[in-house]
Amino acid sequence: MTTAAVVLVALVVVAFLLPVPYVTLQPGPTRDVLAMPDGEPVVQVDGQQTFPTEGSLSLTTVSVTAAGQDIGLVEALRAWFSPDDAVVPRDVIYAPSQTVQEAEQESAAQMTDSQSIAAVAALRLLGEPVEEQLKVVDVDESGPAEGELKAGDQVVAIDGQEFAAATSGLRLLREREPGDEVRLAVLRSGAELDVRLTSVESDDEAGVPVIGVQVGVDYDIPVDVTINLGGGIGGPSAGSVFAIAIYDLLTEGSLTGGMAVAGTGTIDAEGVVGPIGGIQQKVVGAQSEGATVFLVPEENCEEAAGAEVDDITLVEVHELSEAVDSLEALADDSAADVPTCG
Image 1: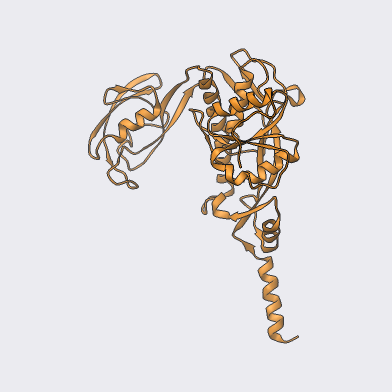
Image 2: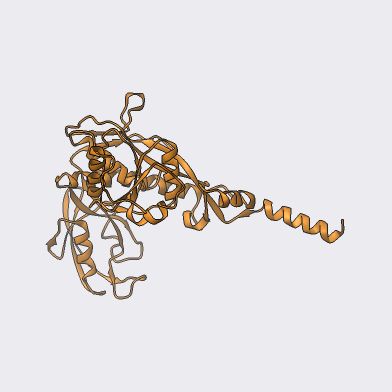
């Protein structure tokens, strides 16, 4: 073998061993949120009457290359040619500057938030009012609010106008012009404060006034919802499944009608179901665990229909109410005409 050939072989070997900037997506395990492992319910609602149910309602997951791990060319090619797996650029899943610890913390926080919002969506679908508050999450060190507002402050009025929805409060702020004075009524440790700030122009959006705070929404949920999943599952994509489970527990009868149901999708406080990643892997994982019905976010429907699965009904869902209606119809008649993918 010539020197050039040896060098070529060595280069090929090195190329196969070097990490590539991709991660793999594979079907992950499912978790029945209506189950009672070890006698303890996965989803528990206290403070309001609940009702027994049956069947299963499973959240679905995707097994993703961990933030701290790399894959080589061989593994990437194997996943590429697998009908059940996928390969995506690493920065689609993880921010380039994100550490392993930051990725794990973000995923855990998203899971916690999705559980609270799921309870809000389920209760509102039941017609129960859930109050919300606009709260300061963080204060920019160089912004107008520095030294005036603190994380945890609740904003109850803007320029004398009270608001029932946090989004209305945000709209009141954005209606001002950069340089305008903004008067805030703020609750801090039970005391109301009058805070006056001069807005400045946003660095990110021309003409948009900001006061140098990051805000979030807190909800006054009238029931206590506990979700006991254990470790290993994070992110916001189980929100719609949590909301359906809470709704099922708070209403008489079984929403699934004894069916094996699985699903995915984010949820917002108004019950709108949002898209997620890895839909085909989730559908494959759900079918392998015995699911016969899969609830698919509307925006994921086209992709979900391309999964290589049989004997599973892919139900298209845009809102929580639509998921409930479809499940009720299928529980009465497995051949019911409900919105489906494909």
